[in-house]
Image (spheres, one colour):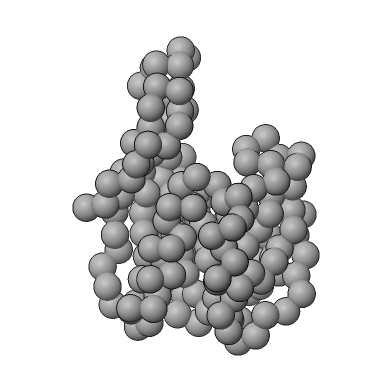
Length: 172
């Protein structure tokens, strides 16, 4: 497929952002990763074909696989934002951003990289993956405004230039 070809496939991924006592659980991706080595993001991964009708289950599965945190440890687990993007030469991608809270931060390990409970005030200095860097402050504001999860899910579209660099996100 050429770099200017239109997407001919779709992929869905979850991104989970957990909070606990003023801290946010983030993953610093392993240097061996093809996409975003050494960069920060939430936890998550691909929604499998048979999970498309159970997106929350897919997000919780990825959370457990990457951190060992299970559903019973998380409260207010909520789908907050959905971001569509089509990078040149890549499938149309749907990123599903979930938030939740845990009772207390605890040490965690991951085979995807390093997990850290980062103080919210330090997140701005991290090298966060582009789309998540723009969505993360919005998610934290969403949670602060809507602890009960009653706000509608917000839908956005990421706009890229011809070289695949994120230019902006437009929220509906």
